[in-house]
Image (cartoon, rainbow, N blue to C red; front, top):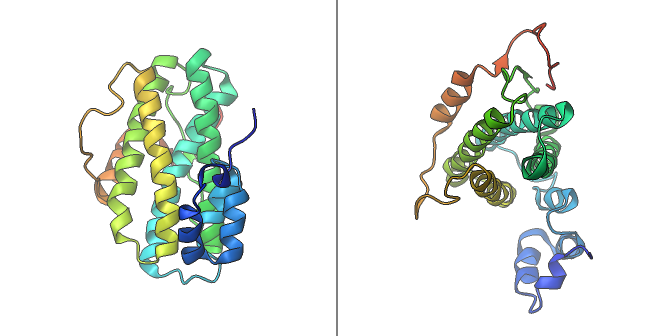
Length: 222
């Protein structure tokens, strides 16, 4: 099957014109040739290196990076352990690759200002299919609400474009794992955003982020 590019679906050049206005002709051309959903496309939509990264945007991007670290490590660990099979294993493999791409893109924008990856102990959530499913639903719903809460606060439009590119993918992840969990992919007509404080409180309550390495298996991915 041939991979789909933006130029394949943008027959009237409406999207290309918008990209040109946001990123310039050469950047828009690259975007049109990039494979949709690929790491290259995500990296291309990231803000240019010369774009000013203010204190507020830096804090928001590092907050997003922290959430992506959690998801990246969670999916990477369950893949490494080989816990899952069938549709769940496929979901973890594909979503894990997406989360790793998100981490790479955010770290690329932040550079030396990127926060370090924490250490994690998922406390059995990566070792059992049912616990994985419940945890993945919670993580994906949390990520969608968190991005929604921060998007209006981003000051630089280039970074907003990148954040929204990730947000829409996280929403698809949430719908996918909800369907596999037997829940309605979209329970309501409208979704509520979640504040940074409440999101980090949820992450802290999981006790997945740890300060020291544990002797229990599996080994940490972070």
